Image 1 (cartoon, rainbow over the protein chains, first blue to last red):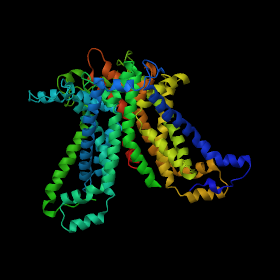
Image 2: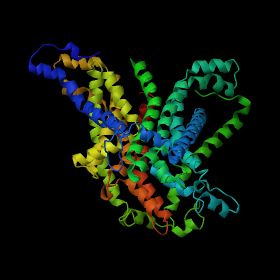
Image 3: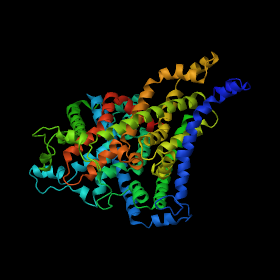
Image 4: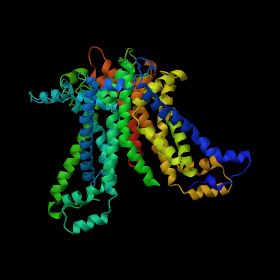
Length: 301
Length: 290
């Protein structure tokens, strides 16, 4: 319900100004979003159809950049890495988050403290996480060296230096950072479940396991949806962590679309191709986010 | 709700439960432990394979070096100037985006007009776009505005892309605020700003804290904008930390890197420890309910 409708519609200029005031207050934001979000999206979209190299230029080349993009091996690597990373990241975060939430929901002692511990990595920068895990996983000084120092001299853990395995180190660090957050989302979901229903099922003799599988987990569906959307969009945007942890290497083994876009645009002077890759990232995120926002905003009405 | 395990197995189930809980505590705390202990020992102890051990010789030299003399990029300034850059960047950006977000939330709930849900939806979508999409035009725009490679430029960028989330917080909060109070004040002759100032703002404490913490954490931790739009002397802490770790020529001073990483983490970590409840609320409001 709008309040402004109830005030006098016809009046002096002052009155009209007063009626327009809310819109005037909102207008800078509308202008900023129109220019810096949607205008910029259109600009980058346009650039992706041009021959831009070091600087934006406006020679139209049609779908050329997109065709080239899909012929570049590094883009291929980036996309398949994103699929591996994204799937593992989402699945492991959800599984771990759900497990931790269920563990924490057993009327345990010191719940507040443990929750704080599980969630603190969310407060850190991905660069900090990257630095910590970079040296922790480094075979020269990290776990490998430590375990060998303990006497197991053939122990090997050099994934971060191995082009086939390095992408999994990104998963390890990213899961460490975000799984506590997923735990918090599921815990909120668990706390919202009707306890009467649980009691009834317990009286009927359902085991704890069956209780969770049949009654609790199906009711967490909204929390799963939110977790999926948040994690998927974080996976697609992942940039800082890769830069800090592996720098995209060894070689280009841990390249993701976000790092690809940056290097093609700003260091390889292929701005048109960089813009095309950004457009594809946007489309992927939009395919996930738009239906979600749509349903959330419609529910509210 | 918790399910009470059957009586006969109470002890074992509980023991396994606590073992698991402690195990995961160790998992989450281990990297922090590694950072802290290794920032307090001489380099030789780390390279000798003692990463997990407590320091044999305790020293704060790595901290001093990371703060004021380590090589960051081309200059041996330590991280201090970049820490200051981050503070200079974060404070105005947080204040501006929170203030504007509060006003937007007020308009979108108490003065809603036709199409305001669409405006909000468009605003919200802007929070989720991959920022790669705006890097190229933003670099040009900052150049045109004369803000390229400067701290004010970064303030501007963070302000612009921070509005969406702060509007989201205040809108959802004000939506639950009784509209009757606003209406009554209006009948008493109070105007738009007076109502905001005297009625909504005094009860906005909790959501303001949530919003400020969210913006502070996000902007402090940002790397992409910092790396794209700063010069050597305007880099924020995250970019400088990355340079410190990646570019060190010669011997890699792991202990200095860890000390630097803790410095970059400390402000947001302190906020989290002091006001964790609000931080979690912000996370949830930013994700669970649009």
